[in-house]
Image (cartoon, rainbow, N blue to C red; front, side, top):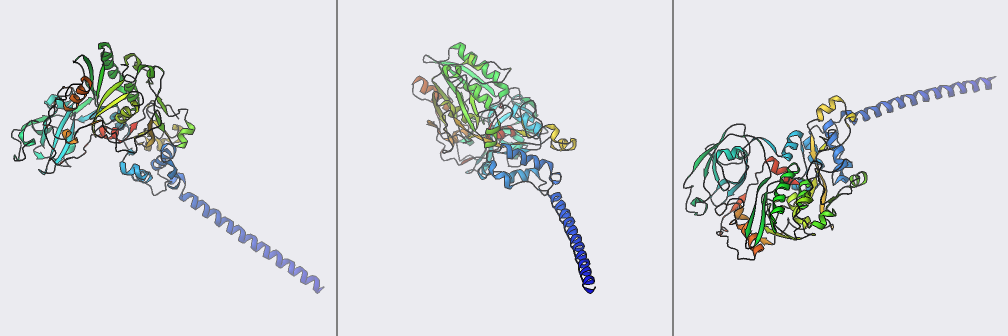
Length: 511
């Protein structure tokens, strides 16, 4: 009987212990679930700032150096999208400042298309003359129908003061844009102050009042045909690669072709680059006709693995590729074997692509100086809006809530997505820009004493091209300025700066 009672008591103890262990297990399970939920909630996508998440998603998809994205996912603390974007950049990209982000996508697209508001309408170079401890600005060129032209500013004018004060880093932005009238103190390019170090101030100045305004800047600024020593020389001064102005290029080359132009001088000395569609269109009117007719590869883009794996596009851009609505460039092709290109340190991105990628097809004679060295390409990325095919998207509109779309609508990125090569796979990444065949001192573009109007045959670089074409002696006069300590302060308009950073891939198919 005792044995039975003892056995029953042991059995009850065992049941009690089992229930106790079960309850302990349940509590541990509940605690683990709650902890897991809390941890998941901490890093839940809903808690991550929506713009920073867009930055991560877009960069993971398209950025050329995408391999480092995996370790840099955003957290709830990444509330500043611009700061977070900067933290993702590859070291070389960060140092060169190629990629960028904006919270005004409409302004970015307007800058690419050449639409500007509250601007002055000329291209300045702002120079710090170290010897004199003075900063001045020189008018490189003036856009037709701009506020600057209406005020009487011309190429070579030197700006001494802005609103009665010396030019500084703070007020120099008024050379580009302003919300109100701006008064410049100006002197002539032949003023002795520029050449005589014993003269402390300009000998004659005047004031020019400019009322900023809105206008569309046509980059096909000047063209003409010159008959010299039996040669018909076509000359084009081109200020920016804007694909929406390709028909203006066609008009110029049609005139060249009808006139029987035998030689071409393409002046890109101040051209910061821009759209690849414009570069291909221009090259299609310059390269040998047989190569254009068969649509030869002009340049190739080297993308990341994701883009290469998901795109129907093979990365090759071909001659005679052009947007619907534009005229076939082949109809204005000059069928040249040699082209003379004027390019300087101000020439970048698509200017360099044109110069470099024409070389496998023809003799390219580069006159000027080392170019900027921008051998990369980018495209605009928006979270969901493709802006009628001008922009790459990350996801469809349905991916985001109405509130998220509202928060994202103004944000866009311009990341580096490719490096370009010529049709043979060669690049110029090993050199500091493109190296000229006929070099001129870079200081000549910082002091305007010997400048002439655009297209003047006495211009020192155009005259060199004419000399090479006609095989006549080079006669342009330039003064010695090697003792001048001149520094380009690199003030750029917003439109010029975004074009300098990389070739804009504006006509790729959807991915």
